[in-house]
Length: 577
Image (cartoon, rainbow, N blue to C red):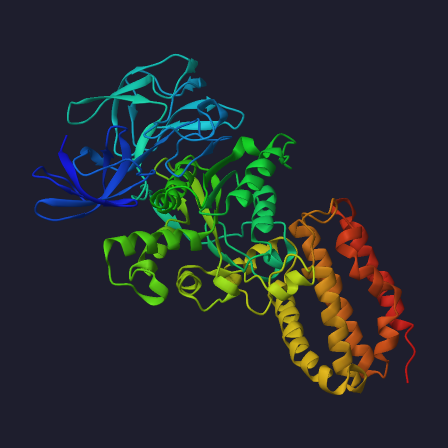
């Protein structure tokens, strides 16, 4: 173990004299309370480190001790269903309202383990060596970098995550004792067998996202929006309804009251899959704005490491990061204390590379054990005043393939989700078209294009209508505004608090989109035959379609398809000039 002494300290950053050998990114402990930290710079006789706790009380001369390993977290079966801080230490009432300085993670929970290997078996890294029965069944995997002959394995029973569960003799002759949990460096991606191309979307249950701007399973999506545009509510809706096996939610530097709402509401949500608490397959990592700034920087890496741990078990994981702007602010503060030359808006010059490192750890992969797993990252961004040209948003756009821009004007008009259809995009459309064809929508790309063209034309015509008046527009243009309004009401609007419409399956999305596009097609044909826009607006079927999402739930999908007969009949009966 290497030692040093503090020479200078400012907030979370310290400098220490040493003649021992340290390494960049090595985990350290500081002071009498053994506060955790990490080395970020080294010179011949001095180290610079950031501390992940409040440094009040530290002084020059206090000891700095190296651990000899990178900053690591303990990964094991006790993660699901619990709330942790940015260093993966439990946040529960048993330790009081605050984490004790220098506290570690206790190992008091016991887990039901059933072995899947026997003495004499040869095991490889990533291979399943047993099953752990928590409310959500987990696999016990041989940790990365370990392989060899099984010398002993515990019988089925209950064990803590720190008890020896298996011993393996490695090819070099050494023997390793394995536990249900193991340490892994948070800044090091976990190994995998290979990356796989996108084959299908991660279904969110939100029509505007799945239909217009889908994110691939294992993809990367950004969710930027100013204050009050509904980022947190939308992420909670995605956490509940997306078709992921495990949810990792990291509150990175958010306000304490907002994080308190998440911590209060998420554990109360019911899992639509089985009616049990959603928390049983959720991990919450909470790091509020009043917590140490350096721990905020580490919390993002902690969250993606936890997500990769479940991915390696063959699960599909959704990581919700709220918000990466606060994480970038932590980088800026630490960079300023280091005296580094600032870049745009004061952010460090390496902001872009750090964002890329984070988002690149998403993906659909073949695991070491031969199964398929994925991590889908949805990162919220909080641009000041909703300015999408600020550095964090612009650099995030370079890293993601799906962009869901939230609009303040739509939010103020109580239009939710407030995703702006003309500021958002998805680069996964062509890759996911085949999946939608299999779901029964062979013209999904064409229908999607029709909707976006209609909405784009609506913006131009509304500017014109404010000048000359809507009634002065030619009938085809009046019809465009009418159809765009129908698309907004029937397809894009969806309340997260509606008992009927808070979730929309791909089958119901296909049915709703299909009948709305058919209405647009028949309305355009009717205008060409001389029908008046006012007559089309007065059709009973239009009023039904405006509330089709709210009135026709998952149990009435066939009834939506039956509306086609009424639609055809009413357009045939339209008077012509």
